[in-house]
Length: 170
Image (cartoon, rainbow, N blue to C red):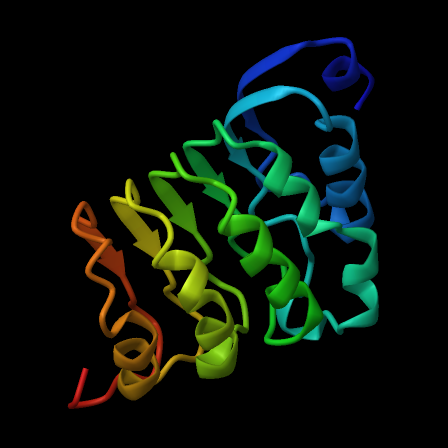
């Protein structure tokens, strides 16, 4: 965190698989305040993503991401995101990231409800070319509903939705 604070521009920050926990992720987001960040990889830093409750996410202020309007890549895989306050806060922040091209939300527990919370913000990402929502307990109906009428996702080339419950309708 000290090194982050001493740097004005962070082109790539990759701290995946470092067992930082939600408190550590929150500290990193705080340290990045006011920095020019282009690629941010925070994934796989929660020991047991499915065991993370709403109260634990108070340490991670996803709203701070909204300040990084030049962000092109964001990896929040395996950080225990679920439908609720954290997903709503993330949705509001995503809507402020107009140049985001790659979004990895895999290995969370968003479910259809969480994806529905994020859907309006995803539609506001005209440069999004890769979206990974694999391993989020999503149904085919949930994915269809979330991405229905997403005409401004015309640049989307990769939609990774493996390890869900899409079934035969997927």
